[in-house]
Length: 463
Image (cartoon, rainbow, N blue to C red):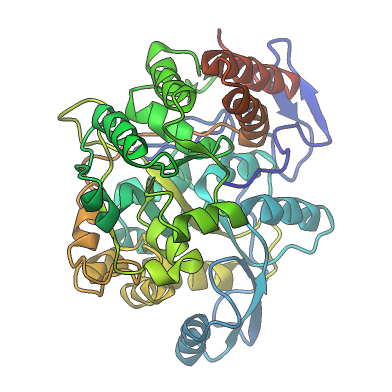
């Protein structure tokens, strides 16, 4: 996952209280001293800013919406068909696509556009980035505007973009975690598909023993979101908030148990230390030297994009369980549409975002982009749709993906300084993996860096 721009620092025009909290002195938006993002419920904010007002309501005349996205590509006929359909339904609204990079680039540009009073109208970012943008005061509160659309997605999906019971985004896609693997090569090496992480470690040993040039998976130290998700599966919570103060805890025994797990595999050379989607990684995947990826329902489309000739050789299974018998997994990745505070067409922008993400027709159309829609219409459509192109033979793919969403997703809270956490964690873990040094030390150092950054930025942090 990409890095977030630094946005945990208090904006200009703030003062700190004796307790270390930050109190805003600007009238546009008071500074939020606590922000969190949970997959199963929202946590408290100490203050809520104004929601902003639209200067152009949907249906008031011709409107051109500036839409920043990295999912809809202007050269993709499926994306253009979606925009054409919306224009057909709303002749006075034209949506202009701007293909901005991943979440880090988009967030950075949005902060700059907000300062320059040149914000777009709809912006796509990953869920984990939303707290920092809310803290920065650049996101419109959509709670009242999307009230009629709430039935279009499940509550635990809406909660991905909900803070302190206020909605700041509309859920585009979700990433229920899954295990994607080379069925043919697992069979060739006589390896059973792992149902627990202990079985995964045994499978890694079996694969590498059969052919030392082959690994069950790559170990990508900079994939911060995966390690946070794995720790959550084990029962850890890296960020938490009680409405007054933050707690940062990467060093609970649950969290450190997952650190020990990966350190053991790296030390025994049972996973290949290799960043994802590099030319080398792509070549290894194509050559059948990397056999699986523990990620989410979007992984098949990513693998297909770099290894289309391997289609038909892959399958997907439920994510290995940390605790045998406990099938709960977090969401991994996924993104939301938000409306910037300074959008000049906020009402029309919200109408477009909710149609695309939560209406039956819109969310079904998102499925044509080979993503897993967050809206109920799109989710239901997956159950009768063709499998991903990577595994056209696996007709139960979407049923496997869907089975964990409603009842077994784990709450994951993201803090307002994910950017700092990613840098502190990923760089140090990469060095530890290459040097085969202590992963526990990395987790402890990252915890200290995250805590120090929160305190420096004026947040109250509980020991």
